[in-house]
Length: 623
Image: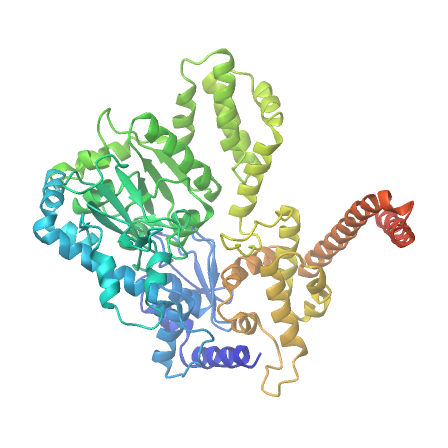
């Protein structure tokens, strides 16, 4: 507790010496206008002509009412502006303010020794590419038209075919740092260990392409087969680092670290299929190109796109069946973003890298300008289909439409599908309603996760994913927390929710509010503000969502009514949840009750409590 209080006080000291307006003015060239107790200017995170970025100097908060749709405090502004973590942003501000930060528990993530060995491996591969054994890899790069500048910028290298380069470095202790050893190399996917005990490099005889996270740190590699002596000519053309604690394909966008500034400036993200496509596009000056790593787009990918304030995403994958399938997979994760989505299909036999051959991005840009809307792209998949094949094709499109978060948008797309196919819209609606439950559940969960509701903590890969929380419950907590953020005098009303809240992130906010309210610390603020709650949360990721929750509540005519309405719903939900659990327990006890007195007694208690809950339900329903 003391460390949390020390951190909160350090943050307050920083904010007392460095104002939000001061930092914003350093990076915004537009005029600043005072209106409705807020200072307005053009958003620094996306291009616009009409100011949508608002600051509240008295609270030290900002919010973008335009494409970003998010906000926060001074720390979150620095995070967005410099694309850095909470702690890196806080350290930058602390140095500027001359404030000493308390020591972090467990050390800082940037000191993780895994990043040291991954960067060292990248350097080793780059050195090998320049040496005699990298000749065939260099010839391949030359054939693809990849320049020396691009090789340097993207850190391209070569893994020697011997398979002993990194293994020998481990034996020599080439990287000396606490925690560095064979186990870490194994965990990072750089080496393998044979049953005999022999250690060998995971990548052998392959062109090596570092894959970096959004902060530019190497977290893994993509490796292309090179037909050289000792390589793996029969192996797959491309392999990636296996999933590790640092490398998750579903959380990485290749090239994002180099493209994010251009995406933020232009508001346009172009997603391609492969590493070479992205490298060649950047080499030709087309710097908003990125690629997903052979996986369907996820909510993490969407979050990265959202952070740049992008207003348009163009998918440009190969024109073959594999490329079309990849485009469909990408759409499923991106449609909940509610931004302009289109698809550009290269001419047969060409890929994006071919379109920028010779360093001219003109053909690629021309293709993108002629891109089809995503709805036209998926609708074209029905051309020439009849009977059962047409029905199955329609099912695929209806599954995509179910991902759209707004019913009006879904209906508009349904009408468009009806017009393009000649099928009655009522038939399409009936078919949509008859989608198998597992499909509708999956797309409903995708929609719920994509919205700005209260987030849930992501389980680690080793944990079982918890049962999905009802989206209506998420919205209720969003309203409750938003109301209490806008009017902190309402905090005592939310106190009981701490014991029943089933969303860890929401519970963390409620606990921070109540601890501030109940504290007997003589140095605590007399009047709690939104900013105090942000400070108390420290580095908890939920702080990123508080500004949108508060704006959600502010849109209501009466914040108190919002709170009471959502509290009634949550009380009702809690009663039904308890009843459901008791009914399941009573049913489980039935088989034992005839010969086990304890089971019979517990069963009777369950039934009595269920009766009481039914009375409560009937009483609230009749009101």
